[in-house]
Amino acid sequence: MQGAVKHLPYRTRPVWRLSHTAHRALYSVSMKLAAIFLISLCAFAAAPTTDIKVDQAGYLPHSPKLAMVVSHTLAKEFSVRRAGNDSVVLRGRLAEPASDPDSGDIVQEADFTKLDKPGKYYLEVPGVGRSWEFGIGPDVFARAFYLSMRSYYGQRCGTAVDLGPEFPAYKHAACHLEGAYHVSSGKTGPHISAKGWHDAGDYGRYVVNSGISTGTLLWTWEIFGGRLKQVTLNIPESGNGTPDILNEIRWNLDWMLSMQDGDGGVWHKQSSERFCDFIPPEKDTLISYVIGTGKEPYKSSCATGDFAAVMAIAARAYRPFDAAYAEKCLRAARQAWTWLEKYPDVLFHNPPGIQTGDYGDGDCADEHLWAAAELWRSTGDQAFERYFLDHFGAFRKTLKPNAPPDWGNVAPLALWTYALGHGKNAEAVAAIAQDSASAAQQIVERASRHPYRISLTSADYIWGSNGVAANYSLQLLVANALRPDRRFVETALDNLHYLLGRNTFSLSWVTQVGANPYHHPHHRPSAGLPEPWPGLLSGGPNRGRQDAAMRKLPNGPPAKMYLDELASYASNEVAINWNAPLVFVLAAALAGN
Ligand code: G3I
Ligand code: 9MR
Ligand code: ZN
Image (cartoon, rainbow, N blue to C red; front, top):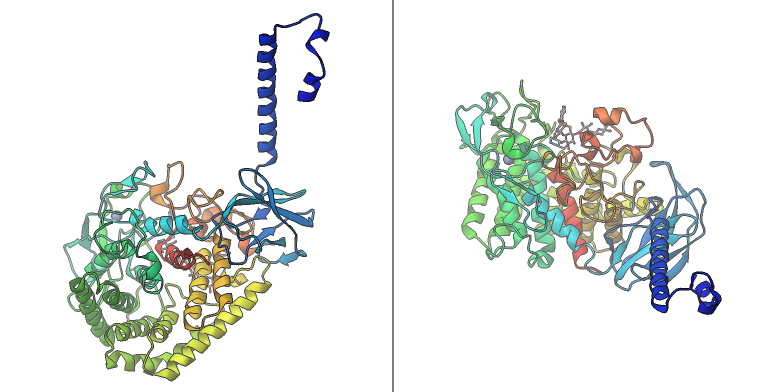
């Protein structure tokens, strides 16, 4: 265009000859229009495609870097371009297509591991399009860590919450300030309603799920604390001399402590009789009941076991910062243990009239073992170690490649804490380390054959499958702590890449993280906001399709059984026990390597 104007000299324009100034003005306007046209053309051509799947947070400089391409054209090549100036920084060939039966996708890998220069990039595949932007750098997961750990502050019950100027509309007034004993609890009258985190998209508080969530976060501190000490979460306690991750965890420990009865037993949950509507927490006026089993001894063994384990870890974690609090936690743990010894098999199921979360585990022997192991690790007392050594053998089989820990299965945590704490019985420690390494090895091998490089099996696409993926990462990272192996860490990061966008939907499953995050979690406080509260992991694909929205979804491959819809609580709710292993793997990734 410029050339065309140039080779028509002014003089040859007889009819509408313009003054020099007018011509310059017209020229400048036409150039601007052309530029706008070209820019909009580029922008149009450059809209990212879901066919190229990247971790939208990014990749660590010295770790493997893969993107997955799913296209019908079966492209051959790809390039990586620098965001901002679009220069090509690397070209490569796509791998042979591989079929993934879990998603039905034909996947080609793009390997750009060689690229280790920090920066912002995107992938381009001729005939397919361009990817969302991602970073390479040692700190690419810092923001995701900050938001996902800070999301617990957003889940706080019993206080006003305000995410501050960065997230102006994200606040709620103090909620659920009054509690009462439900008839099933064995007591009557008012009960204080103290602190805690809302479990998920609902406002219930459940000790079993709080247990594994808080335990996982305390382990995050214990294992990666060196890297986390300085991380501020911008919460009300920030700057008080205690690391913020411990400040946040304490909010929930305080609620758990309030759930212990005078005899040491711990009630299973505190919630309303039914789930409230989609209203902000402070508008929920349903009575918040302490709910028990309905008959003697009213408290449940699984809740009491989890409680004992978590309070024992807390005793270790808070000792350097607040010895009196640590002591209080330890005392509570010991009392819970005593109760558990007396009542090892009291199961919980929702009593009549209660429709909220059940977390009804059919066997509390693993919670018992976890309590013993954590109490031993914190106190060194022989009685706890003896219990552990007498019972751990039966649980060795839980260290397997297709069942990472979850709220109903805490036996692996028991075994690991004994080994991580250098238990006195060297044979037991060696056996646990060996079992863990061998399971991790098998996960690595399975994942390396998976077209998406993830640890999930077809059977793992259950309610909270994204939590399963994150817990595989936890399992691999603990195995790495026991028997260091680079591949364990890399496979753990592969699951993180899956959660942050390298999946069949090209969705980042953490709210407000990445360029293409999911938008509609089943999360009451988020309803009606332009974007959901930040840092929340979606439950993810669920072949069980246990909600009405999902039942309308034609049955298909399990990894596709997901809806980014508010109504889909079985695939798109958020929960503290899924966010916790996400925080764990993000903490591992924080240092960058
Ligand atoms: O483990 C089995 C598996 O072996 C089987 O193949 C599969 C078939 O569907 O089911 C698996 O069990 C499922 C289990 O989750 C897995 O953990 C159950 O069907 C499923 O009903 C169960 O769902 C639980 C759900 O509550 C319903 O009770 C979820 O684990 C649990 O995370 C979820 O928790 C809820 C709380 O109740 C209330 N607050 C929100 C929270 C998150 O959605
Ligand atoms: O909101 C509830 C969610 O937290 C639970 O995980 C889920 C399953 O127990 O139930 C949700 O509540 C729904 C209820 O079960 C059925 N009616 C619709 C409710 C959602 O508004
Ligand atoms: Zn509340």
